[in-house]
Image (cartoon, rainbow, N blue to C red; front, side, top):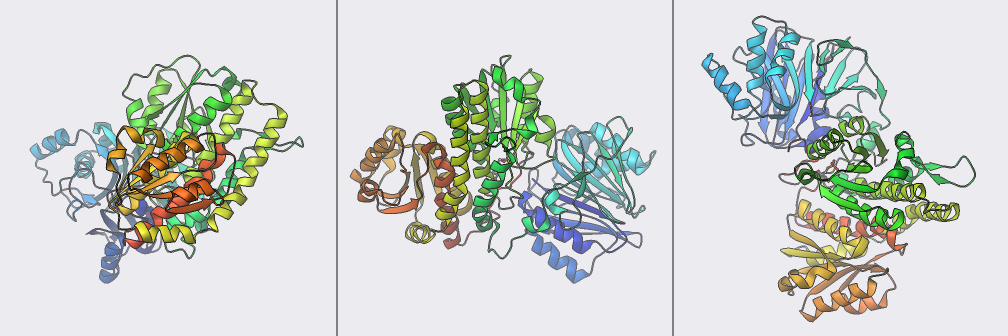
Amino acid sequence: MCGIIGCAARRDVADLILGGLRQLEYRGYDSAGLAVIRDGSLVVVRREGRIDNLAGQVKASGVDGHTGIGHTRWATHGAPSEKNAHPHSDGSGNLAVIHNGIIENHEVLRERLKAKGHVFHSETDSEVFPHLVQEHQKTHDLLDAVRLAIQEVRGTYAFVVIDRTQPGRIVGARRDSPLVVGLGKGENYLASDVSALLALTRDVVYLANGDVVELTPDRVRVLDENGADKPLQISRVEWDAEAAAKGGYRHYMLKEIDEQPAVVAKTLQRHLDESSGKARFVLPDAAALEPWLANVDRISITACGTSWHAGLVGKFLIEKRAGIPVDVDYASEFRYRDAVLSKNHLVLAISQSGETLDTLAAIREARARGAKVLSIVNVQGSSLVRDSDGVVLTDAGPEIGVASTKAFTTQLVALQVLSWVLARARGRLDREREAKAVEDLRVLRFKLEECLSRGEEVAKAAELFARAQDFLFLGRGVNYPVALEGALKLKEISYIHAEGYPAGEMKHGPIALIDANMPVVVVATPGRVHEKVLSNMQEVKARGGRIVAVAAADDAAVRKIADFVLPVPVVDEDLSPIVNVVPLQRLAYWVADLRGCDIDKPRNLAKSVTVE
Ligand code: G6P
C-alpha cells in the first residue's frame, strides 16, 4: 500500500525512480509523484492517476537530479488528487517527504503546528510530517530532526525525507510499514520492497521497526530506536529482475498463472530432504519449532484475502491428516475477538507479502499472549518472517498482479507439506505413506501443465458469460475454498458481483437468486462428495440456472447436467484445489479482459495492504 523509492547517486536518477515506481505500482495507483534536488533547488512533480501520467510530465519538463524520491499512492486520507499526492513539503520548501502508512494523531499534530504558523495544503495525514521535521530542524540536524519527529507520531510509517540544502543525503524511518535499503556501487537506494530494486542491486538491508537510516551515494548508516548505530546485515535477494518482468505477456496475472507448474515444484523441492534415499518432508526455515510441533493440540490459522482461502484448505488437510482441531480467522477479526489461546496452541499465519498489517497485528497479539507463531510467507525479509517463531517459505517469486494466483497455489503446497509434517509428529504418517505423498505432490507440476494446455474451453466460457452481472461459485469439502477463491478472483478484476458458497448451503439462501441470467460455476471434480455436488447441480438446473462445471474431462454425469465444462486432470481429492483453481483464475482473467478491465491494477485495490 503506497510504494516508495529513494536514491542518492552521482548520476541523474529520475528514470531510475520512475522505473522503481513502475515495479511498485501494484502497491497503489491513485497518484504518483517525484522530487529531485538539482543545483540547490528542490523540484517536485505530482500527478493524479498512474505512473505514466507522472512519467510524461517528468520527461516533458526534463526534471532530473542526483538525489531523488518517488511515491505511488493508495489513498487513505484525502481524495486521490494531485494536491494530496506525495511528496509533501514543509513551509520552508526545503523538504520533500514521502510516506506509507497512517499517522493516527495527525489532527492533533496539525492543530499544534497550525498554532505555530504552519500552513497546510493537502487533506493528508502525511503532510504533518515535513512540518514536524522542519520544527525540529530549528535546533537539530536533519537526521536528529527526523528521529525526534517520529517520536511524536502515532501510527504506522515508512518515511523518506530529502532536504534541498543537503543534496546527496536521504533520511528514512520505518514502523510497521516496510522499508528496505539497496546497496549499489557509488549509489544507494531505499524502497518499500525489493521488487523495485531488482534492476539495480540484489544486496539489501531489511530495516527493523524503529530503525532510522541515512543514505549518501557512498554510505549507509542505520540507527536503532535508541539512536545507536547498527551493523549492516546485508542479505542477498534470491529473486532476479527477470522474475519481476512481464516477459512478453500482456499482463502479469497471465504470466503468473502460467508460472504455477514451476513455482509449485520449486516450493515442494525446498521442503524435501532427499539425503537418505527416500524423500521426507522438512521445514528448513522452522527447524527450531519442529520438535515442539508434536505437542501442538490446537491451531488457529489467520490470514486475509486469498491467503485466508488457502487457510481454509489447510484446515481440511490438517484436521484430516494430523487430527488437530483447526480454526480459521480473518486476521482483522482474530486480533479483536479475544481468541482462547492455550499452552500448546500454534498460530499459523499465511501471507504472500508478509506485510499485511492485519496479519502482522494478529500474530503480534498472539505472541504477546504466549502462542507460538509459524508463518507461510512468500517474501523473504518481510516483517512476518522477522516476527514469527518459524516460517515455511513459498517460492512463488515476485507476484506483481494485484489478484493473487501463483502465491495461492504455492501456499497450498506449503500447507500440504505442513499437514504431513504435523501428521508425522503425531505418529500418523509412516515412511511408506510419506513416500507416496511426496510422489503425488511431485506429479502435480505435470498435472498443472496439462491443465494449462486446455485453455480454449475457458476462453469460450468467458465469451459466453462475460456480460453476466452476477455469478455464483459453488464447491464442497476441500473445494469449497476454491469456490470462494474463484468468486474473489472474478470480482476483483472484472467488477462482476460474485459469491462463493458451499454447494450444500445453496438451498438455504442463494438458490433464490438462480435464474438463466446468473451463471453458476460448480467445482465438481471426483471425490467423496461428488454425488452430493451432482445433486446440487440438479437443483440449479431444475430452476433454470446455467452451469459451468470444473470437472474431469471424461465425467459423463457432470457433462449431462452442466451447460459448459472446464476440464481438469484428475488428481487425489486432497490435492485437487491446486489444480481446480487454475481454470477459475483464467476464467476471471478472460472475462475481465473481454470487459476491458485493467487486469493487473483493478480499481480501488492494492496488493500489499499495510493499513488496518
Ligand atoms: C490484498 C490483495 C490480495 C491478498 C490479500 C492478502 O487484499 O489484493 O490479493 O490475498 O491482500 O495479502 P497477503 O500478502 O497477506 O497474502
